[in-house]
Image (tube, rainbow, N blue to C red; front, side, top):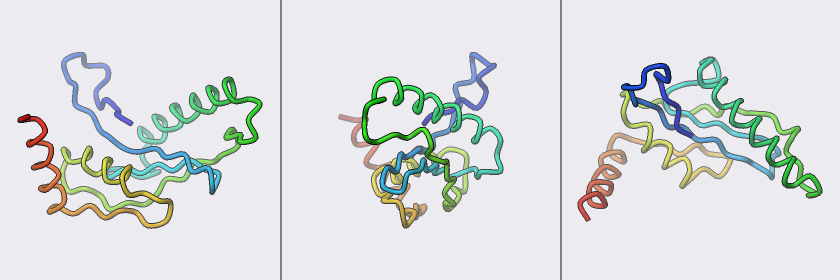
Length: 125
């Protein structure tokens, strides 16, 4: 997910990345955020809005499926918090690559440096 941090300001395109996972096995939605927790109203409002829309869309297109997600609760997964305001995309990408529903991937400063190098190599191509 990408959330604009100042949506009322058309010139400020600053935002924050976090992950929402649909865990069908454990029948829940999982929110992984490297800056915020369930106590943050901006996070919960944004995540719940998206999840409610996803549930509505699922019900519309898969109403006859044996898998129904409307009753799935939301779990805000405790993660290691990043130490700055600009590395959230690297944390989110690691969550998406490695999250399997049990152990939260630990993202270290050294990993972020390596991910930045990969990103810059891709940009230069």
